[in-house]
Amino acid sequence: MSQRARLFLFLSVMGPGIVTAFADNDAGGIATYAAAGAKYGYALIFTMIVSTVFLAIAQEMSARTGAVTGRGLSDLIREHYGVRWTFFAMGVLMVANLGTTISEFSGIATSFEILGVGKYISVPLMASIIWWLVIKTDYEKIEKVFLLLCLSFFSYVLSGFIVHPPWKEVLVQSITPNFGGSPEFLLMAVGVIGTTITPWGQFYVQASVVDKGITAKEYRYTRWDVFVGSFFTGFIAFFIIVSTATTLFVNHISIETIKDVAIALRPVAGEYASLLFGFGLLGASMLAAFVLPLSTSYAVCEAFGFEHGVSKSYKEAPVFFGLYTAIIGISAGLVLWPGLSLYRVMLTTQVINGILLPPILVFMMLIASKKKLMGDYANSRTYNGVAWTFTGILIVLTLLLLAATLFPGLFKGVS
Image 1 (tube, helix red, strand yellow):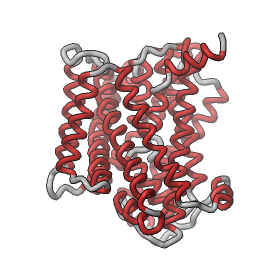
Image 2: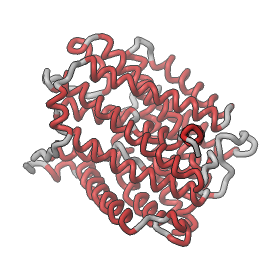
Image 3: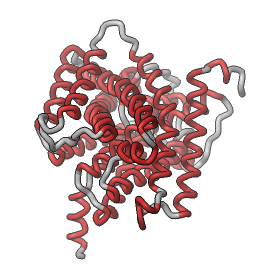
């Protein structure tokens, strides 16, 4: 096969891995990376790079399983581990994804406020556009919208260059493991890793590979799609940390919300850096607001045997589109609700995701290792060793974060 033919085939299957990886850098992810840079400078860049490796391994397994089996993750969990585990996973996933989608619409509202537009205009307008595009189009067209939104993330790259960081110091810190002695540093490190790999991401990448019709024959190109997406996820996160470390950390400016970052950037980095940060937040929040409800609809419909797929009509898949519509409507409506504590919603979502992530990772590993199911595409012994090690580290770190969230007094006085 010629190089030109290979490139054309890669472009034809490109999408699921890149979209899922970019969507992981949602409003909550941007807030975490920005806070890491603002509070600890460049110290957590190495941790972020490690988390990118975790992401690539997890996404590769999910995408490979989807291509080989032609089935989604929740469908396989039900078949191999029973209805009870499936019901547990789907129930918690719905609550977690609803809370996360609320935070995405909060990010949309915040980005428009940075640009001078109130949330009572921006949120209903964007919610309507997001809903309409998915309801009225097919997978190929909506994927092009997703890929276009991915381009907005490169505004963070521009912000990183605008602030003129000390590149030699950045490079040294990027390859130097940093283990802070305080529990706050540990929790921030866990947050950086935890915001990169999410339960919904594993369900979505596998479902989108199946929905696009990618088979084992084309999988080697999808693998590159996953790896390219994971690389750029880390690449964008790198520049978010660099931007806030170079400006806010150096000037000892504390932040509480994402909006605080954009406002604080103006006097130290200029108006353009602030606007670019707001534009990136808008693209990130929009992409995740598309993907999160779709991920939920895919997973639930796969688990319980309902028709699903963006390319189907509302009549063909009423549960799929009905659930998608409900999540969009509820999330956007709650962001507009007076007096709602979005911080409490995000905190609860973090706890639920912490509970769900370890079993999902284990399910994913076990399924990808089944020789009868995966054939020659099953995890090799070496790959299993590496993947289980990474999975074990993630589980330990997630449990630490969960314990610190549920019992904040547990780590007081620890040095």
